[in-house]
Image (tube, rainbow, N blue to C red; front, top):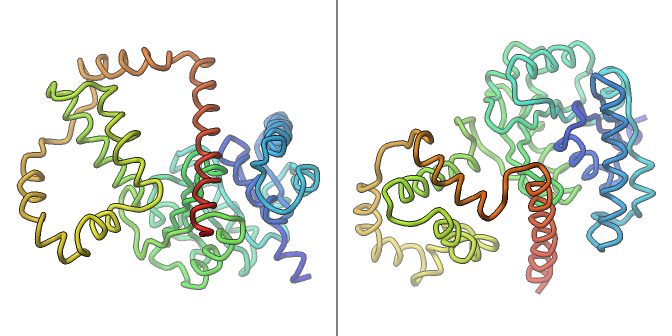
Length: 319
C-alpha cells in the first residue's frame, strides 16, 4: 500500500496552473487525479494536456523518461475532492487566487485526509497563516508557489505555516526535485514571498523611470531582456556581485556607497494608474496587441524561448 500511495498526487483546480502541475507530476511517473467542480472543465483540461504533451514530444521538449502516451495514461479526472485526495502522497491546490475559496477547499480537505498527505497551495501571494489557520492537519500544510508557466520555469517557492512540520518542507522539497523543479525554502512567511518581492521592486523602479520621462517603455524592457536578464538567466544578483569584483567583500568595498546613494533617490511607490498606464499600454500594444489571438501567439513564442533556454541551461550545467 505504501508504494501505491507514494505514486499518487491529487490536483484541485484544472486551469492552466493545474494542468501544468499535472504534466509535471506525470513526467515524474506519478499517477495524477485532476479535480474540478464541473466535469466539462476537467474534460477540456485533459484535452489541452494531451495536445500540449504531443507538441512537446514532437519538439523534443517533453520532460521525464516516459513517452507522451505513457504520461497521459497516468492522468485522469475525478468528480470529488475525496477521489482526488484518496491514497495521495501530495495534494496541490490550484483554484483561483481567492482567500475564502482556498480556505474552503482546505477546510474540506482537512476533513478528508489522514496524517500522511501533504496539503499544498499554489498561491502566489496569500500567506500560509491566512490559508491554513485552524486546520487539524496544519503541520502537513505548505505553499508551493510555482512561476508561470510552471512546466517551462522550474522555480518553486516553499513557504511554511508557522506550525508546518519541518518534515513537510523536506518532503515537498524532495518531491519538487523529483519532478525536475528547482525548489527554494523560505524560512518564514513574508508578504509577496521572495520572487514577487524582487519582481515588484523591479517593476516599481521601471515604472518610475518611465513615469519621469527618463526612458521609454520599450527601452526599459530592453534593459532587462538584453541586459540584466541575460546574466540573470544563469546567475542571481548576489553571485553577479561576487563575480563583478574580486569577490563579495571586494564588491561591497568598491560599490556600497554608490549603491546607497542611488537607492536614496528612489521615489515613492507608483500608483500604476493615470497617464503612465496609457503610455505603457500603448507601447506594449505596439509590440503585442492586447487581443486574445495576439497575446496567445506571443505567449506561445515566450514558451518556445523558455524551452530553448532550458536546453541551453541544461547543457551549460552539464559541463
